[in-house]
Image (cartoon, rainbow, N blue to C red; front, side, top):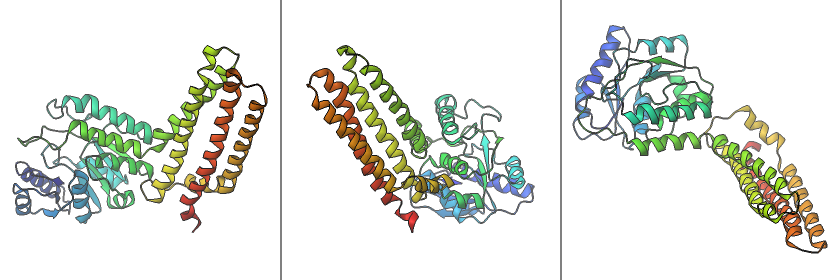
Length: 363
């Protein structure tokens, strides 16, 4: 359990965890990742038999990982120390872990409903929206992405290689488990109003943005590739559609669609480079398709394609300037030539950079 100034509630949380283990003959421990409490939370927890780990780096994720990494159990269950989680009823989590599931998520929306347990924006806007985005991006089927009460195996935790420092840690667990194709399941759980009198550490909009930012950064396909392909198609179709005929009212849109195509191509390129960088640095689990990427796209093939596009653009330039230059011929010939040349040069530069990033794969 992560902790930062929870003197009002930490005793109840530790006692409930101890009671559950004793009642179910479970050999276990309660580990607190303390993030610099100044209200005596550490002494309270130690007095009740919990192991308290001092975590210097601030943040919910840091405190959670500090506690997890100091624990010794085969199965790990995380909970908050504000007495909002139903720690006395962890049987569904234990049962699913023993059945072989790698990650067992609590679902607060399937448990008993208490309107005061979650702020209106969290219950009806923030959590549903972020959960929907998470399920869409990472092909999960989770109803509550951010429930702090969850269980996972030691092996699963070690494989997930978690690294986030703040509240987005809750999303990272689900995302990494999904990327690694771990077995995930949800169980209903009840959430209660927090037992403390002070204001919660969770900040609605800043922490909501941290979750959304994490989901976007860990899914470059949805952040760069899908928008890039979509707008590239609009750019291509728009360019061809507006170049039909000699109507200046229509032709004036050609540079706009041409620019949209080139910008969108940058999105696709950035997706590829981001994917390689993130995989090489362990941010995204390595998949077989990643290794195949370096087999199908090589420096030589990229250079050939880039040179061919560039030459095609030069030919179009020649044909365009060979004729009498006027506004219509400029738009219908010179603009496409510029697009093709720019595309060829970008392919050449991308191929070199792609090859540099892929040097690690050759060693």
